[in-house]
Length: 111
Length: 111
DNA sequence: TTTAGTACTATGCAATACATGGTACTAAAA
DNA sequence: TTTTAGTACCATGTATTGCATAGTACTAAA
Image (cartoon, rainbow over all chains, first blue to last red; front, side, top):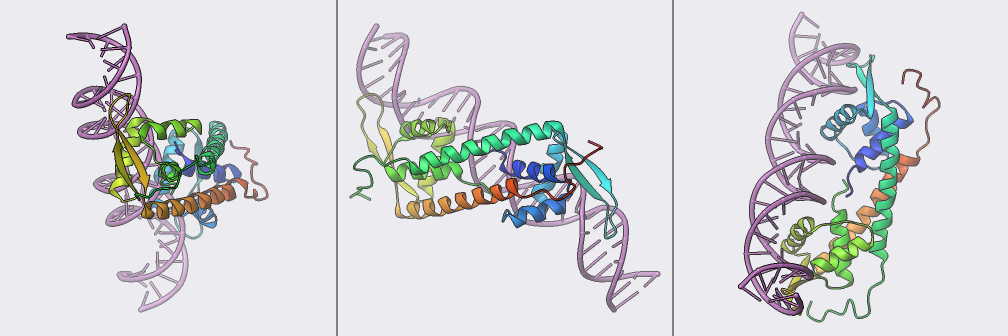
């Protein structure tokens, strides 16, 4: 139901600019979404295996080479669909949370 | 991360009025959230085991007795916290989706 | 007596997110 | 030179969540 929110965020990030894992974690953290390596790496592998992203290696002056992830055409399409799903979920939950209480509800002498 | 959206919806529904399983499925469906029995019953059991709801049996004229679920004080507290979490998640995802692209992003001659 | 409708329950599976630990490269400190 | 710290990628196991499937049990109508 609420499947793929993290996927949505990561696709959105790499759609804006190619990024490697630490980049992505930093950007998620800036939005107060705490994600750790153990979550992110398998997810990036999944996105690649599904053809939604590709990557290239780039050397770094301060450590091992970096895997820069880049979105593909199918990735852009998936991103668009995930955005729509997300908006629909927000609307659905909002309906539940704001729907009016029927008369008499909330009176629970036995609680 | 996005843990407990269904839990939020179900707590919100029973907080408004005591309900049994088919009631809840109907109300979720009205908000375009499709949930089946196999998902709902274990979740209702979990809520009860966590002390967030209690239930009472009521006889029915058309079938077996119904288990009416009712929210408890801890349940109301949990509902309030889940609502806050949900709002924060919406804000976080929105930040990711609307954050500005850095200069040069989107120019990918190798894609 | 059988069939249909309603409602609750049990079991197993797949996906998601996390914890944990490991590998490997660079550069600075001992 | 060797050790330590920092950066970055990867693998494995586990808990939770949600779903599929199948089964049980009660009532009422055919």
